[in-house]
Amino acid sequence: MRGDVCPFTFVKSKLVLEQMEAGQVLRVIVDYKPSAESVPKSMKEEGQEVLGVNQISENTWEIFIKKTR
Image (cartoon, rainbow, N blue to C red; front, side, top):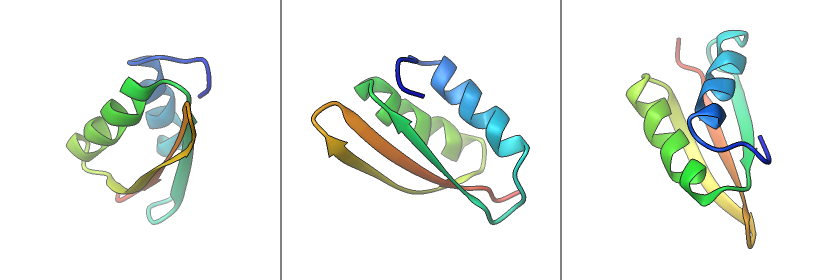
């Protein structure tokens, strides 16, 4: 999701999750700090399990989301 900003990062992640089976884990990579904060929050509000958010470089974060349903 590099180059995308919210809400597009969340929307695109949600669309991918809809294609996945419950229990699978989605790794989302973002390069926009507000997305690294808002995507996990929005996913939790949607009932998904956020396994973690890691900063992997100065301007890059990875978000792990486990599909719950």
